[in-house]
Image 1: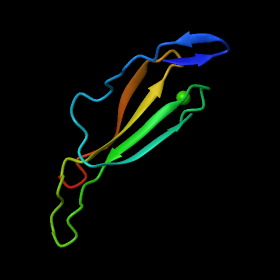
Image 2 (image 1 turned 180 degrees about the vertical axis):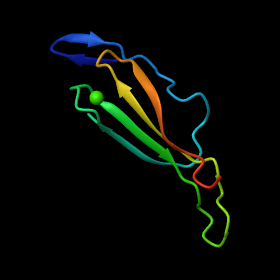
Image 3 (image 1 turned 30 degrees about the horizontal axis):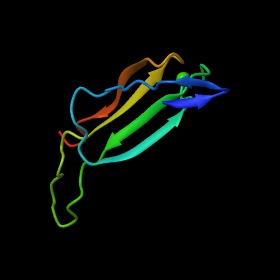
Image 4 (image 1 turned 90 degrees about the horizontal axis):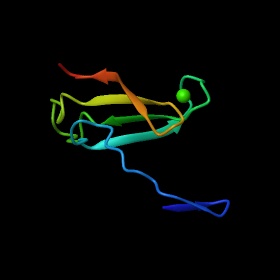
Length: 84
Ligand SMILES: [Ca+2]
């Protein structure tokens, strides 16, 4: 809940991913497509064990969620399965 100009807004919860994020490392909010609505970029780590020659998370994924300015987001895969 937040107050803005004397009005109280209830912020809804969104579950944008259809699964848990594994070692998320990036989260940026910006108007990526230039339509005036904020979008979200987020991504998972693929490798975090420095001594390992193989990725810890071979299915690491990066997403862009395009916002419509009304609280709705359309998911697009930016990159999937970096090591498959
Ligand atoms: Ca946008």
